[in-house]
Length: 532
Ligand code: GLC
Ligand code: CA
Image 1 (cartoon, rainbow, N blue to C red):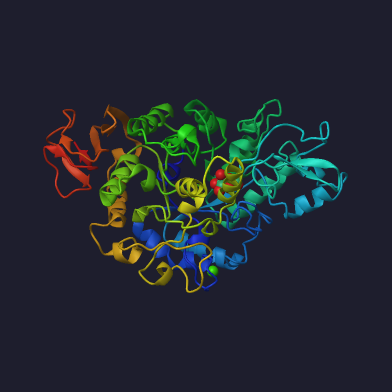
Image 2: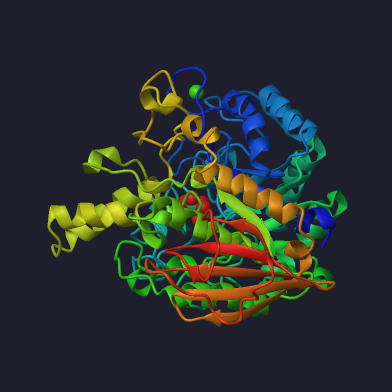
């Protein structure tokens, strides 16, 4: 791995909800440009920008109709380049979102493809004849219903693992692979530094399987091809969105000699607190498992295959609403950051996480915008098992919209996000705006700044070896060690205080602490970094 790849501290921007400058209620590129100094002040060195390409917006930009443009609601290509320059001049790299499992059905390729069976673009997508007048197989789409959509005009079905407005590209077709490689080169030549690769382990399909799923037989081959044709020549960084991998599979995708991806996200800890991982079905969080899973990934990857440290993104409700403690909002927010970001790996922070935001309150179904939420509501309702109230509680718990409401910049109306009507409700709680937290030493925001700065200036927090010394579900201790320097990360994941575990040295120096003092006991949700 290149050094800058290892050193990445990324901040994810969900552009629609970041900052609106023209009053249309939708965040825009000018809004990002205006906040670059804020980003710099956090101590991040990379931005991952969720899709800002032209899109009908069926899935908020994850349905792309033109891979080489900028959506007009976000701005122009020139503004995009100005933003990129503004980032680079501040030492910030830019990762774009690479959404190549599928396009929008309004992408020109699909418009052509569906127009006739002998159109040259027909096999850019996956078309199948009906089987006994039915869908070709039983696969279901991630947003509900069959993964196959019948198209009257040509009498065949096309595959869509997500919404029916997101037809899956046919990666078996070498022309498709070349188009994608060319498109990647187009952005890299412009100066973009890398990509977050959307549902990337789905690009190769295995039709012998009963369920639609990832890691098909040609996945490695396809990724290697992109690596050779586009990513490697530019030294680009990639992180794959890869649900459900084991550490061994992650290693296969990221080991240097294979030349595929640089890193992959793992989300196993984010399945906790959900019955069988079902995002609309809550259960108490197993706090021991939370730390054990993270430790498993620390141990499971190799020296040059870095874990990715993440707890929030635009597909997740706010981490604090599930893993935090409402009675200790500051302590639990900073504890989670200290616990996670003390580990070895590449850091990702999602917009608003640095403020310790909780899920906003949705009062009725019509406050939701997300296609997944709206479809899940419809599908769960049709089961006839849940009252409307129960359904709303489920959506409140699991909806992706919980993480998608606008950033509260100021205490003004709509949190200073827009002068107009926001595309989705804003939630502005006292003490949770950038304006209030910026100057407050005891804010979550300033804790994040301190954490990142301490981490940057402590050598063993980079490459240092990880070792878990204790995890009983309430208290954990792990170390990071490099060249004779050791940092102990000591964390109380519980509302009661406890005596200091014996494995914690008494003569070490406190370099990060979410309490003012550090003594013989660990306070509720206290987390401390100690250097020896
Ligand atoms: C990824 C994105 C998600 C999107 C889906 C389909 O999981 O993060 O937002 O809906 O892919 O593109
Ligand atoms: Ca706007």
